[in-house]
Length: 255
Image (tube, rainbow, N blue to C red; front, top):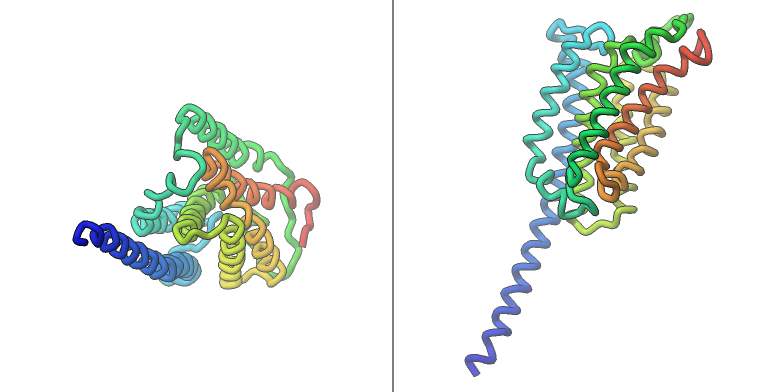
């Protein structure tokens, strides 16, 4: 009899362990979501209110070095906060992280060179934009080459927050479609904070819609495509490059 009860006891203990693990994971998700939201909101509010209060120009064009250092700080905070999550990436991704280092190095080199050439040579060669509205134009409409220095760091910062969200939802056993919907909602909603930058409602809505569309695509890149973070970053960066270039290319007076 004693030998027959041991497997049952072990099974019950195993069931309790699985249930405890499930409860622990369920409790982790709200905390992770709270951390992502808190970091994102704090970084945006700090940019719009803290930097000016400290006498620092909150501008990607006129204060590019300060803005770059500011987002480099948040990049470090994000990496430290979610490092345990990032270590689980290989568990949920279809491909091992940096599995083919040569391919990863080539992608990085081409992306870096392309971005540098656009910002340093192509953008300055485009026709200038004449702004005739009575209100101050959004920075993206009058962006200089220096705009892309802090913007590149900010995009990486946002990509790491999105990656944390994707991995946190993956740990809950969510389907990739559900993860994509959640990312679209969060990424789109967080762009409502652009209203603090004094831009018109139309611009805020435009960026929210675009961010929702990109937010839906990012999880597929991060979990299903080799070097997905690189491609996710490149797509994100290209959106801003195109947004900056269009007024120069198509009209001198875009409202």
